[in-house]
Image (cartoon, rainbow, N blue to C red; front, side):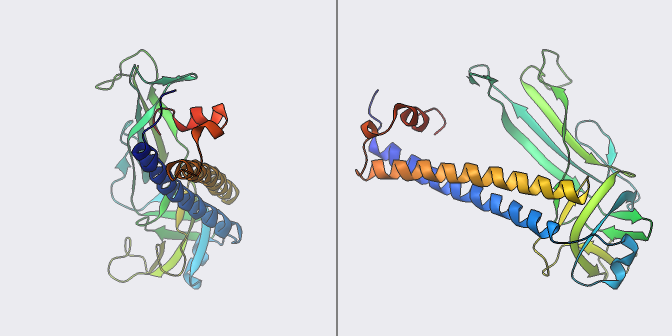
Length: 257
């Protein structure tokens, strides 16, 4: 095996530690959100006006704006949606098949009502984390779909539409002149809680989503930091590649690191 230049080892070590630290931070953010929601209990949508600070509600979506959004790929009416476009190149693949890369993604949301048997409350999604179940709407086959070649592209979409189930955790805000609709109060982003989430499921599944995602990100991030630390030892001469198991060497020099 050809010797890897020391500058390459140093840059790779620094990059892995930085990326790993960022991924770990994002994982801890997800864990914090899941834990915060788990520690709380939902109240009735009609009871929010009597509360202060962080509030949690679940119910069904009701339209607030005059016109709904339309999703990026299927033009489905919704109050919130996210999308993801993945592509792969013919010359990039792994043992399990083509290597798909996310090349475009995003989230859009507009104010809406959460309604239950106690009443309704407006939600301003600006600044919130929108968590939706996504599904593949096209691609991954040998059929061309519009301007996108489905053999090398896959499109995913999640949506939150009127009458869908919704769970919201955020801060009760008193409307000034910029609140959604003509409501005197609403749920939105604020300084009294670091958690503001909107999801298309129940409280329990919302908690499991954030905890599961957080654990996965933390494990992946710490693994990247560990590999970066090993490369750092190689860079400063405290460790030689010859001292590492062959499986580790293969991991450290694989394409993309």
